Image (cartoon, rainbow, N blue to C red):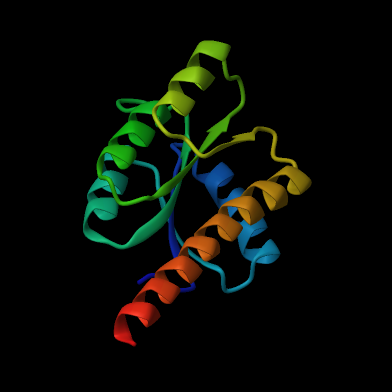
Length: 143
């Protein structure tokens, strides 16, 4: 069972942008998330594979491995990890590909605090809803 703070991974080759987004999220949702940032997508995927990560936030355009590839590999792990795609210039085709591969949401650059709050609140609500379901199932089986 997962509990707060939920482990979040941010993957962006631009360290400044991931730091800004992490600050927004930490200010808006104190103690809800423990954020680990990576500039290297392969290192992020290795970390995700070995840790109970609940959310991955990834930029689309990165060298070597782009965000839609990160999204697909995370979804293929089959652990119910939520993925959010950061983009400054998303084509319709890229958006469809990411959604078809299971992306849960998009965050536009430049960052809009209202959009960030709404997006992360929706993801947090979904995770907490599933937590409640799992608690009820565990309680029912224990009875």
